[in-house]
Length: 535
Ligand SMILES: Cc1cc2nc3c(=O)[nH]c(=O)nc-3n(C[C@H](O)[C@H](O)[C@H](O)COP(=O)(O)OP(=O)(O)OC[C@H]3O[C@@H](n4cnc5c(N)ncnc54)[C@H](O)[C@@H]3O)c2cc1C
Image (cartoon, rainbow, N blue to C red):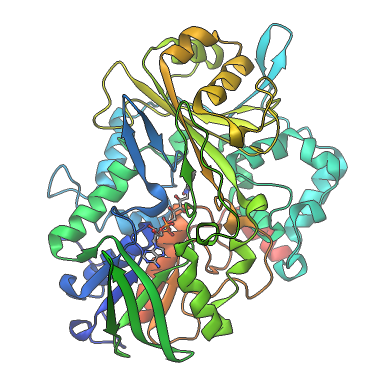
């Protein structure tokens, strides 16, 4: 038995009579289902999770095998110390024992088994004899830039409405080591939202030295898909939650701007219409980080997305568009969905069948896999960064196989060695570019590695500039529908994190079911408190 985290139902719906319809099965919907069941006491069989794909997890998917190569989608880690993550993970039993929770399991792994060395981000530049590490510690900003940064953090959000980062800083700021690390760590671009950048600064500035330090963030034993998504989905399934895969929600009809009355879904080619009672609850994940993504292979570049096709907009955006057409309270999806050149990015996963690459990297960085932070190649035209996790990352990964993950902020640019845009490169060409940056031998390592590139047109769409009102509130003055995911407005919090989807889901359940206690907020650092006092 698990202790209830929110107080019991004080008002609102009688859980026994509620049917909850959750659109999507990413971490946001899975979190909603956990708290609907455990805290609001909605019977599991009355919780319906509708997912267009054949598997749960959305953007936290991981697939592959040692032969064709593994694919990691979300290669970095959520912050397991965030109170809303703790709330979720302590509500789910560990897959290894009934007395323990998933939170116990993750904490135990990090205390006893995960690599413990204290290590941080490495920034490599080309030196005369090979790649050299840029000294950490100094930000390389001028006095004026430091003052600008401080003034920027003191600015109220209203003044930054719709501005980009480059509207607020001079060109030289974007050449500083400070920006290089922040851009690579959080996938920030100069044209991204100034509001979002300010929120990130307020949340993480005091941690600049330890950004990416895995000791701070924590590892899961295997990939997030295997160690986070699967245990939650299995738990829900075991309890009797109704999962429906290959099930695309195609329409939500509202009788008024506050109330959904009908949900239409297409499941395995058959259309089904469900009548939604005002007492029922519909919780919709808006958009998706992974919508429109295409995979390549070691010998093939990812297929480019045909602009204007349905895929360029993606099924993941269609329900949001319909809601926005029915009420302005649902915000403006096109602000985020239709600016692909500003939101696309490319990731790649490398499967190694020979230890040579990681042995050489160990010599270069002095860090074992999983102990270090990001490895940033500052001189790379594509702005490549690598994340080298502890091994194995997959439960079926053979002991002589290693896997790592990387991404590039400017895949549209011509490479330094492979003279074409990363978008049109095969996996092998991407690995070849990387090896030449590191000055590692190419032939032997390429022969024993498989690189799978992944083009993600909407990966940073949630960071694009926005006007006030473009992002809806979690409960946008509605009666029986809430919205969750990366595109809702949660004051002060930072998007592009799993925590954001988790917190939004907890807020949705709390509001919809009339639970007394609000989801816990992250403790603010005293620096953020101090800045707030000055605004
Ligand atoms: C490369 C990469 C790196 C990342 N790095 C980090 C990191 O370092 N730290 C961190 O915390 N987070 C990171 N993230 C972000 C994190 O993975 C996402 O924030 C999270 O997955 C969002 O979850 P979600 O449930 O809100 O949405 P999603 O995971 O996008 O799920 C939405 C789901 O809804 C389904 N769906 C949508 N519309 C419909 C419909 N009409 N009918 C049926 N189903 C529908 C979709 O198929 C999808 O499965 C990263 C993500 C990626 C891809």
